[in-house]
Every structure is written in structure tokens, then in C-alpha cells.
Image 1 (cartoon, rainbow, N blue to C red):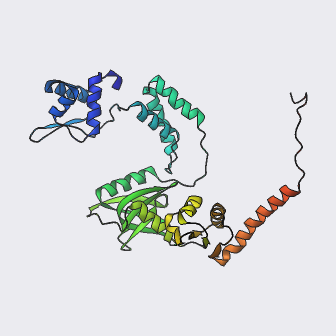
Image 2 (cartoon, helix red, strand yellow; image 1 turned 180 degrees about the horizontal axis):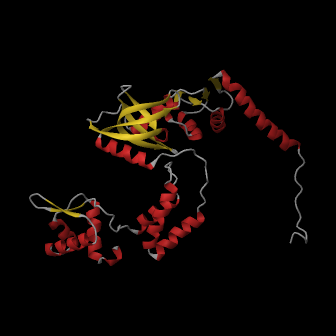
Length: 338
């Protein structure tokens, strides 16, 4: 374990973790020791399970590689607390991640110094997560297959249940994975449709590598996040509503937190926001956040109107009940209350 290592070896291990490769001379200079001491310390690290490899070349050197077993981890105080806090609050849209995080946290807390255990316990005591029902999460094994395929540029196949066209087999060239809210998305080139597509990972099953690697394609966007945002903004929806308000685009974005692609400037102090959703409640909530005032104009799906009228009626009923009800009498504590 790391507490069994002398301070010099801990510094050596820390150096090996910060750079791909070091020469023996560089390590010796950094630690103010001889090359012989470096070689002896490297041998000791290997005995403890750290996979330190010797590199070839004109000068030779060392690098920390991946091993068959997980060696003791070297973390500073801030890193250890950050990892423990992340494990306690793990809700990233992956099925079963909460249970896995609890097991990992139990192992980590066994080796934390007492001062750090107290910090982690204080954060845990003061933090209350909201138990949102966010629907199905991504399968960790599916994420592992897709991530490896993205890294290796390997074609994968899977069955996908789309929202509009049902379930069908897909064959794609994976590019990257993007986390947006509670959902994981795979961005890939669909060879069957000869086009770039996005896939919700929780909607795909049986992802399988084909063993065929291909040259990576250039993504038709600045980055994967921009590509996903553009696709989501352009996706068809059952209900739409465009609202032009006397406010600049930055103000509208700050109020609504929608995708930037859905807001456009139409003047120095005027902008239009395009709202779209399959559920009218979502548009109503975004409309409340926007709070369009006098001078605003509206254009959208006529089918949305009765739903907005229903929401408006709910608010009117609540307001009427508050204005017509008798105000609550202040409560005076009695002997019985005490």
C-alpha cells in the first residue's frame, strides 16, 4: 500500500503519473539521487504491483503502463476527496452505477486517512440528493463496447429502437460518446443510411464489434457537442412554438437554458426562440421561464393552444383560490402546544 512507500518513492511514482515517459537521468535530477537509486526504487515499485516499463531508445527510460491488476492508487488529498464525493453522488445516467459507486467508495474509504474520511463524511451528511425518476439508464457493458469502438475506429452493429421508425439493426462507424443531461448519445456514421446519426445508448441493445477497423471520418461539425446540439435542435417534434420577444439573445438564453441553436437575433434588442417538444408541458414550462411581456408575438402549432389554455386555467384557479380565501390566522402557542 502507498503508506508503505518512503517519501522519495512516492515522489517518483507521482512523476511517472504526470508524463508519458521519463529518462533515468531526468528522474535522478528531479529527485536529487543517483541512477542506481532510481533503478532500485523502480524495482521496488514493480514488486508492489506498479507496471513500470523500461523504454528503449538512445537514452532509455521508464513509463507507467497499464497492468493486469489494479495497483495501489496514489492520490493527493483534493483528488481523494473529489473521487469520494463523486462516488457518493454518482447519478450519470448509467444503469447500476449507484450500486457500483457504493462498492467502490467502501474500498476507497478503507484506505483514506482519518482527516479525509471526516471531510468526506461531512459532505455526505450535508448533501441530500433529489431522487428524480429519470427513466432507463445506459448499460455499462454497452458503453464499454462503444467506447472501445470509438477509440479503435472499429465498426459495430446493434439493434436500435428509434422514436419514429421502430426497431431495426444498425451498422455504424462510431465517433464519440456525449453525455447530455441524464442521457448518453453515440455519434456515429451510419453505413446503412450513408449519413451521420446520433443514437441514445439506452435505446440500443446487443452492441457487438465486427473486428473491422476503418479510417476515421471527419465529423461535419466543430465538435461532438456542437453536432449533437444541432441534431437535437433540428429534430421533428409534435408541438412547436416560436416566440419573438423584445430582448436580446443572451437574455433569452439565460432565462430559458435552451440550446443556442434555438435562439436567433432579429434586431439589436429583439430575438426569436423556437420551442419544440412532444409534450406540451415542456413547452409551457419553457414559456414560463421566458416570461414574454408586452410586444411579444407567437406562432406555432394550433394543436398546442388547448394545452396552454389548460395550463393557464390551472394557474387562474390557483390565483382565484388564493385571493378569495380567508387569510390564515396567526397561531398563538398555548400551554398544550408547549
